[in-house]
Length: 102
Image (cartoon, rainbow, N blue to C red; front, side, top):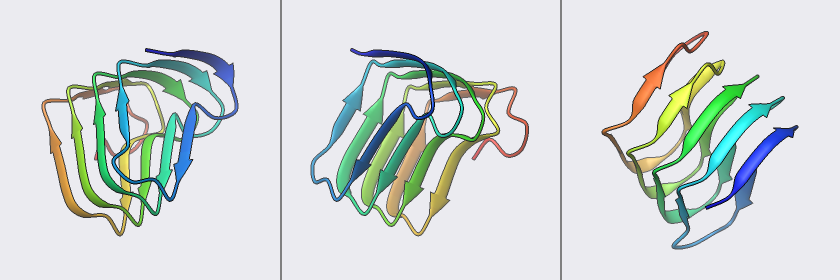
């Protein structure tokens, strides 16, 4: 339940286990809205991410990740994945991306 506005990054996490990121509002970010690296058993849900210059949600080397019920609007990329395994993406609203949604 955080609000992050007008920043370089929204949220960033590395080497986390059992991470839950829920019900945050992130907007006007000059890099990634959310960036997760080398983590496992992560749940990303109910977030509103808008107007990010790069990725709304960036995943790099993650295992067992659920991304659901998020709203992603007007970013460069929606959900970006680099080497995530056991990835479930469902029930998200993704619109007005400059490149790919997922």
